[in-house]
Structures are given as structure tokens and as C-alpha cells.
Length: 165
Image (cartoon, rainbow, N blue to C red):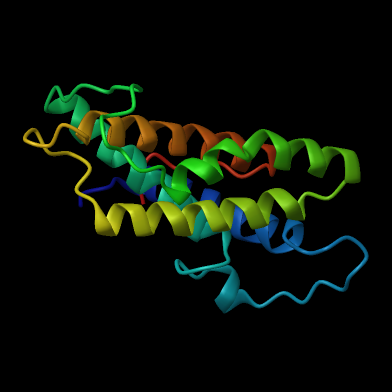
């Protein structure tokens, strides 16, 4: 993709700062922090860039849906089986409350990593934008909820979500 140099620098800075903050905040309070630059910058698993990328990818899906005029619907379709993604999304406020009470941002970091993994599995096993599928509008609503929770959680950790990656 064509990205101008100023935008590339902005993205690189947001990813670098996100990787550092996440590396520090994922640690349990009172433990030594061992910084591994390769793990910290990885786009797979337990890292800030992984969380940023999952959010950017979901945002991209939402933009495609808007361009194709796909509806979003929060009504649960007939026969829908509750997914792990829905269960995790529902837990966000409890995780944030506990992290605040215990002064432990690692709870939020761990939760966001688990949520991103679950969304990636959901995305891999379900076509989210499909005009022929009656569950597609609900899948889009779940994607929108995922983006909202991820953006909120990353914001609590002081990590920005780039517009693109």
C-alpha cells in the first residue's frame, strides 16, 4: 500500500511506544521486567503490536462493510450459539474494575491479548461480510464491539491504535 513518509513515521512511533508500554504493563507488579525487543515488536501473540494490528484489521473490516452498505445489527439471529468472543467482550468492565482496584494493569494487558486471539479465531472461521448470510450483520456488530473494547482497553494502557498498519 501507498503510505506517505509522514504517516509511516507516525505509525512506526505509535507501534514502538505501544510495544514498550505493553512490555512493561503486562508484567505482574513487583516482578522484574526483562525486555526482549524481538518479542516486544512481534506481530504474533503477547505484544503491543499484535493488539494494535488486531484492532486495525477489525477496523478495516468495518470500513469495508460501510463501503458496501452492509447493515450492522445487534439483534441475535435465530439459532445463534453464543461464542467465546461474546463471553470475553462481556467481561471487559469486570477486568477494568479489578485492574483499578488492585493497581494491576497487567490484568487489562492479559485480557486484551486473550480477546485478540479469540477475535482472530472468530475471523478465521467465519466470513464476517457476506450479503447472503443472515448472521453477517450480527457478526459486524460483534466486530464493532471488539474494536470498541480493544480501543478502550489500549487507551487505558496508554497505547494508541494506528489508522493502518
